[in-house]
Structures are given as structure tokens and as C-alpha cells.
Length: 363
View (cartoon, rainbow, N blue to C red):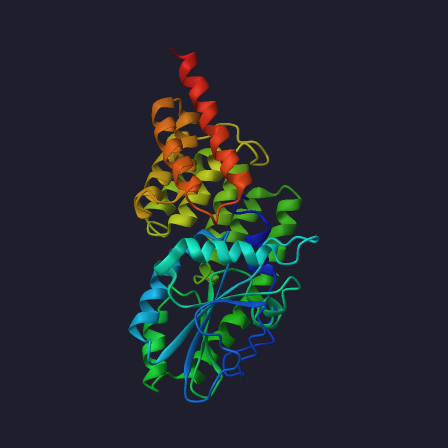
């Protein structure tokens, strides 16, 4: 159901970096497949400000940013246009409009919670290629701010000070040249990181885990702006010294990632996931519970995938009643969420049935 943090997505974030579209460049055209909600924006107009946010119906963090973007759209309704473009949706070879209907159903279900302009990319992913891939962005949600001169002045996560940036851009006070220089330095740092990461990968392939950990520690010190390295360190410790790995995971949960629900969830899931490879020898399910509970707290018991993680951690720890409690919450939330794939809903339900059988067996 979910990849661990040593999966392809995280590795691509570290080693796949190419950029043709940068801050300061003219904004590409928005040749979307369909405008789904709000007034279409066929072209960017001089003198106007726009936010183009890329998202997907299957993306948990994207759902969390939607209310925030709605508030921005209301706050700046006469000063800026907020546009959400769905990309990277699951497409059907036999039905080229299937993904559009998925987006339409999602937007309809959100109602006024998603109250800004919404569009969808085509089957070929033209928008994703000309915007996201061209800008070296490989994860959603990602927002682009376009200023009054129709140029891109900021690229980043919509929850990472988009409010402050947008306010300055509207006021004509945003220093886009300084931002371009900052992102240039970040790209240069990423290129250097690629080389160091290559050495880490080589050491891991050779089974030299202690040396790999030393390489990671050097990288963590050298590249403080890349917290994902610390998660890779956790995964590396799982191979070198599991006991240390769980202590380190708790340390991350109490410090660097204490307010990052998605990162906490993935760390906890790595501990409980049956598909974690190589299999863990002595999984610390209490650590997984502690970490997942924090993630559940941050999401106010509203994220079914995080509730599922907590439930499975309880189950693995032998607490079937709490497992049933949180799994039932996960199943009910998922059932009411049109954006969640039916296969995922079935997996959550199957896990609930598994817990019920275990509870009945204890009677």
C-alpha cells in the first residue's frame, strides 16, 4: 500500500535533479485538458498575480493544503488568482477521460472547501512536463507564483511561507532576484549532494553499513537543509543496529519531525510494514505506536492512512482492542473519501476483518 522512505520517491528527490525552468523565467502556457471549476485562465495577463499549485487526488499532503489555498483565494480574491492543476493521476489506456472524471468527482466532493480555479492535465502529462519536470520538481504539492510581469518568482511547497511570498508579490516588494539566487545555490548544493550520495549507495551495496553511516553523518552535517538524509540514516541503522535505529527514530519524532505528520507516519510504517526489506529482526512496535500516535494527534484523527498505521502498530504489539478502534476509524474515513482508491479501501477493510478475527480468537 505504501512505500517506505527508502523507496523510489525519496531517492529520486536526492539523485534526480535537473532544471530548465527557473525563478525569473516566463511562465509556460497552461494547456490543461479541462477546466473543472471556476473561471478558466487560458493565458496569464500582465498586471495580475497568479498561484499555480500542482496536486493529485491520491496525495495526502495535497488534501491538507486545499483549505489553506481556499483561504488565500478568499483573502486575495481581487488581487490574485489561485489555480490548482491536477497531475500524475492514474490514467486508463482504454478511457482517456477516466482520470478527469476522478478529479471532477473529487472536486465535487470537496465543495466549498476547494473554492478556487481547478483544472486537470491530459493523459500525456503535458502540463507536468512543461512545468514540474522542467523545473526539477518531483513531488506534489508544489506551487509556482507568477508576478505582474508574467514571470515565475517563487517555487515551493504551498505551506512553506506561500502566504508571505504572495503578500509581497502583490505589493510589488518581493525580491525575485534574491530568490533566484537562493534557488541557484540550492541546485548547486544538490549537485554536490548527488556525488556524496553516490558514495553512500556504493558502501550500502558492499554491505559496509558502518562506513555508510559515517558517510551519512558527514552528509547530514554538510547538507542541513535536507532532512530526508536523517530518515535514510534511520533506514540504514535498521540494517546495522536495530536497537539504535528505534532510539534514533524516537529522537527524530521528538525533535526534527515532531510537527511533520507524514514523515512520522512513514517512519512508523517502516517498522510495522510486512513488506519492509530486509525483514526486521526485533521490531520495536512500542516505538511505532509512540511515533504514529503523534502523527494521529497532528492530523486530529482525520487521516485514514495514519490511523491505519497506528492500528497496525497496536495489533503487532498485541493490543487488539486499540487496533480495532483505530482501524474502524480508518475504514470509516476512507469510505467517505472519494479520493481514496478502492483497492486501498479494501486493504483497510481486510485489515479490520483480520483484527476482528484475532479478537474473537482471544475470547
